[in-house]
Length: 126
Image (cartoon, rainbow, N blue to C red; front, side):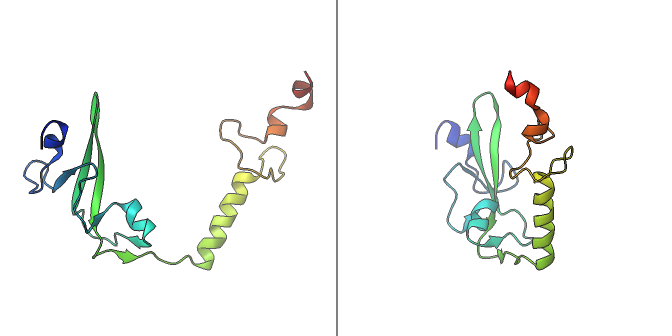
């Protein structure tokens, strides 16, 4: 492979310590965390099997770690306690700390309060 791909192609792992492939050229049987999750799997504690590198101009390359699909485990199911904790956290993100009302949307961290409290009537009328 020539050019940028040549710098990223190391199937034996001699250069980077782990087998390395160019972006989109990973062999079958390996997947990223996101790809595993789309299949309903998780790495399950297995070590990194390989990596893919995507060279970038004037910056370091983007790195994505690959895991073996055959060693991946199924995603743990959502428990009732996890579901309740997630619902409580999302409710807290929608509750305005100033007026204590449910805003109906996630309050932006840049405002810190709901839009009604951030921009009172005097400012909106002008």
